[in-house]
Image 1: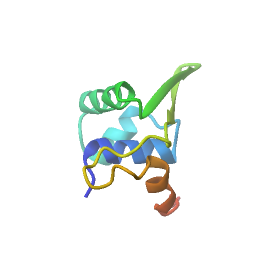
Image 2: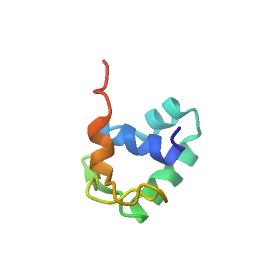
Image 3: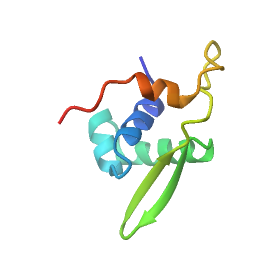
Image 4: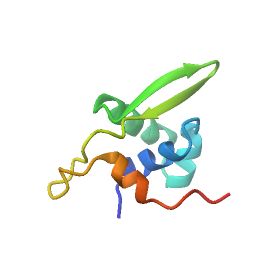
Length: 88
């Protein structure tokens, strides 16, 4: 089971243009909590944010290692690669 941080990161990896309110709705958390989570992911270097018009676009740093004690040698990109494609 992933944390809200992990789930938010996966949602953003699937859709770099996702809105914070959409992440909040999927995770069943407040938009304020989502803002804090995304800010923490940016501060940790897992995400970068780019302003495109009136919207934000996020970029995932897939080369970074996971911060799990037993999986330090696995990078984020490896985890993202094994996930099933998003269903529409």
